[in-house]
Length: 347
Image 1 (tube, one colour):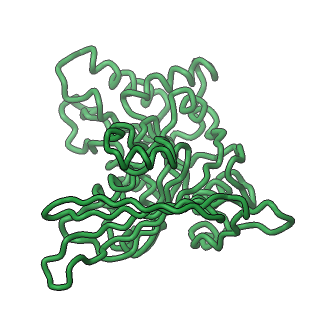
Image 2 (tube, rainbow, N blue to C red; image 1 turned 120 degrees about the vertical axis):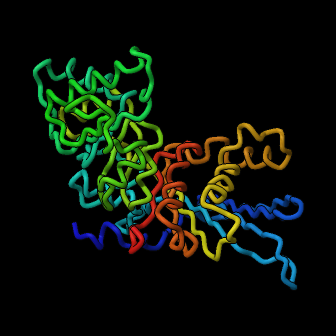
């Protein structure tokens, strides 16, 4: 499959005649005070949700619209031979499963490009691997496994250090190429090349590549979706299976597409964008706010459950890689499966 087929834009949507449409506009004034307003309509078409962020402007002319976000869940066509174009996530999973096409709900065996684990999930993952594949078994590819201790580190507690010691033994036994130890293997002093937090280190060390599948034993593995790849967190049982086979059975998620256009004010960051989106989608803790309870009634507290959150638009294109990583990092807080941003010259 050519790269243009993987990274190209999502093609047109053929909406079902019976699928409901839900549009939501929320406006507020951020300075000097807040004002909340909610408008919603229901018609025929596809599910969609949009937010408008109006910020106070010191210039003459009142309020100026700075950001427009549109969220869409596309359902595949089911009539005759008419087929909709695949989303980014679908294209990536189709490539990884050696299939010409996949649709939401398909269960496919995915070839994993990178498996990441750390000192919390790592020992248990290797334990599952040994139990299922044998004590003398070898991992499927020692160059596609990345191990980054970043939780139980820099502590004098010997029990807390045991996990890192276990990882060190496994990496030596399996000849894991990308083990970023916190200690120097020569003298066991502090390692000056230690890479830090796993999600940052994955990017800095070149393990995040557009079009690939990256799985990790951390819920925020979705951060790597900022690089135009499918990245999601998995459990230690799944990771143990990947260690032995390099594959994992995944269900193709439907996609919520967020189109954000316009110039973002200097006092706003990507965290503000994703919290704005997450607040509407996942508002369990804000149910006491009267207008929020109405939104929950419309889309539920788990509006992004097992869904891809795809971020596009001129606002996203202007974000730095750090800001894009922030967007994708927070996807799991909305109960999403993965976040993804198209690769471009910034990537």
